[in-house]
Image (tube, rainbow, N blue to C red):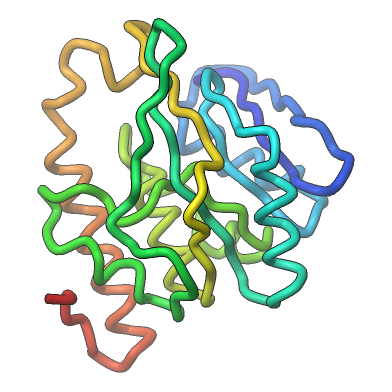
Length: 207
């Protein structure tokens, strides 16, 4: 994802759109530039080789419209080359979470991230206020923490996204692990600092 980016401006009838860029800029920059073209109330990031479940949009959109929260997410599934899937339940428990609470389920940068970034359907204004972080990887960790820090939301106990596991994915490339620890540390510290600022200094991790 360097010279083109797919973004999903969610409404009841819109299809994914594509933005072509004149040169490779990296995933974070491409996704942020795509936000300039979103004209719908809700947005959901997605990697270009993954899939949504059939009812992913309807379930989360109905929840957003009926409750008035800023974001709605779900669980994800790893989809293996043979077509089988493995359910991933994020550390954040199902239910309603107040602004900033999702970060508290990420106890340390080395632990599993608290919520799947691509499972989040959120108000577009929140996504613009919490865009991708300036990282070569893990940029969506920052986006997920930003969105969930700025507004309350709901996590549904159902899979809404399929993460396709295959040899061509970015996370499977040689050298990917070299910067993962640093990216996680940056995103974790960003989430902690943002929550602290918004809550007047409170930044404790849940036991």
